[in-house]
Image (cartoon, rainbow, N blue to C red; front, side, top):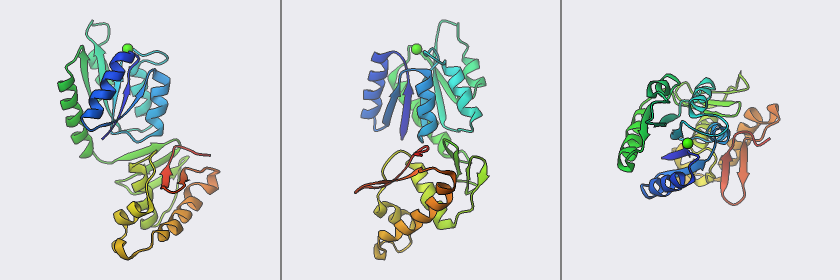
Length: 225
Ligand code: CA
């Protein structure tokens, strides 16, 4: 499970990174509102742990902007207990859950796992990478609002890359995930389909979201252009 921690208190952010990594989460950290928002927009996280009091842009605004952009990432807000910030407001802006500081790490992990389970059963799953939107339930892809017709195989490759957005995915893995007869198939077959995918979702828009990672495979990034 991929988690983004947006927290400006460096020691707390570091402790969360270490603790959550030890629990098997893959963790990225941002230290202010604008960079947290940018990271959440450009990568496919399962959950964002979002502090309310942040420099640049507060957690409520980060949350509402993510929702306004169509992101359905799980959001757990860390609220202060002093009453200045209303927990109800966190939920109003589109957060899924909240925890008041100071909180127990064990409780945080339990809430994150529960949230991930709820998100996993929530449909439709949409991945938003810049102006590229991939809707796994409707099996549609749009770029800058334009619907792009894809073959089922092309969509399956794109969807697989989107689930692992920002990471290198090998041709062999794509083959295993999508081809019925993966063992008998040549990984280079994947290249043909990825080329076709690029000609549809990238080239006409002057983008390069589907990137080749030398010796490793492919990576889907927010823009790349
Ligand atoms: Ca803070």
